[in-house]
Length: 511
Image (cartoon, rainbow, N blue to C red):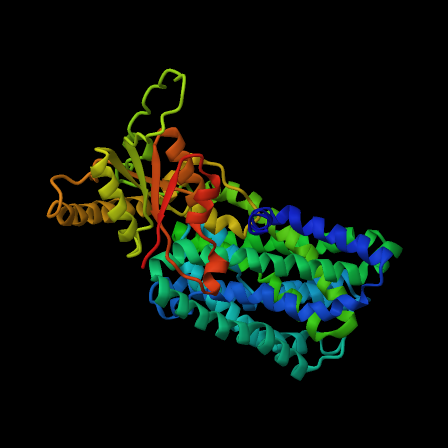
């Protein structure tokens, strides 16, 4: 189930249309009214995980003031009025669809802002800050803009909108903040960012596709009576996003350095459609389904346009500055060449011959329990021990919410270079201090700073692959020993390796 959600997150541009089609078919053949009871649970599931990964403290960091001011000026001084004007032209007699356009233009920035800024090698710190500021200001301003611009066309219940904002934004934000603090306290900031935080976006994706399904199911019979409606919705959205990309690109190129300019583009074009969808379907009753339909279609335009724009980034702003540092050592340089295949033996020996041990470490205190066994068994069998650490692929994480799968080894290597170097330094120091302690009790330590493997990607996949390709005889690793809710949420790398590996695995559990 978890892997399925991750795949959906990485292919949102396909998942959203698929769920729209499924909702349409369901709504044609079934009475979808009962689905309204699922709106609140799916809304919370959509918003809360996003809030856990949001670092609110980024708002108070200095720097990039110009980029932040320009971004929010576009977000609240240009885009809402553009969406309102286009809505007047295309949906003059359909005010709730015009409302959908307005809502899609009112709440700026989402995880996609960070994802695409990272993919285009923009200023990630600025993008994170834009996301927090835009979301907060947008949540406060949305009821006021809706009342000011749409108050004469539709009935506006300000109290109901504010109530929904509190329920779907500020309560999940507070809960997410407390959850984040608790997880950071337990796992540390580094492990939270690399191992814990990436587990939440798939949950948010489940909420998104659920709400899209419901919105489509509720409007299915209306669409069936007028199939051209979807094409008619697409046109104004394409106009809005097209203008937004062009205008923000001009502003960024004219006033900001490359990294900040890219963050500005994605900080103003990427809208928080999850929040817009939740407001539309929760705050406006039955008529809100029309507004929700427009927002659901906006998902398709937003993801596709972002994917196309990133290909033009270098042409518009110039190539990213080259890293002057020398490329870090890659794992293949550090892994000993696989031993040649031994001739087929007539029978299997009943005595295990352990010559090569792969010690998998996540560089947390729990890893020291596994290190004891790696050193002891390595010494007893006179075996060499390689230490492997897997750094999560930051580029893939940033793009997870953007509906794409990254398969560019050169970009991935460059993007993750700093994280890999930091991991190498930490591993070298850990091995040095461990060796000093080990040789107090035995003559030699099988761990060596020359036998370090650092990979990027999925820990289970990379550990098992390295073990197979390197012809290792044994994998040794630790587990954190937790039995709480985050163990269920995070899953277990050790458990994954046990199931996936064809090589024996020894798991050291803390006392």
